[in-house]
Amino acid sequence: MSADHPHSILFVCGMNSIRSPMAEAIARSVLPASVYVASAGVKDGERDPFVDVILGEEGLSLGDRKPQKYEDLEDGFFDLIVTLSPEAHHAAMSATETDATAVEFWPMPDPSAVNGSRGQILDAYRDLYRRIRDKLDDLRRR
Image 1 (spheres, one colour):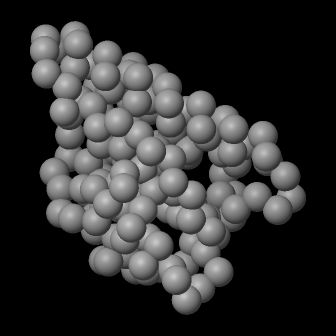
Image 2 (cartoon, rainbow, N blue to C red):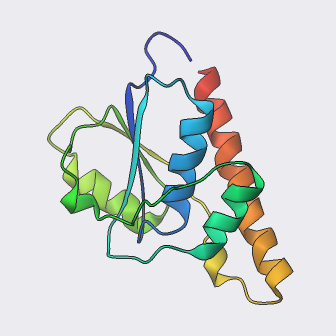
């Protein structure tokens, strides 16, 4: 990452149960340890067990982390907010309209919308993992 890379990044999605916690875990593994990383959701959510499976396949873990709401964050200042759903993007744009926080929209599919066998569902979560990892690799190269 360049010298002007963000020092703090918040990932936001609808319920902080799939996309944003996955992004948080991946970011912690690929970005420098000096970058503060967090995630939140626009609404209350429950932890998704498929996220744990996919992260486990990659040697990552959320530990005992629980979903949290964007409005409940103790530290509200981030250099960069990455939104992963339209709902999250709208909320972040409204919340940051008076400050200098950069907001980027990385639209990501919701793998929980996939129907089919367990294998097909896990493939949708793996696809999400790859998409997020690719975007983080792009961010790292900036």
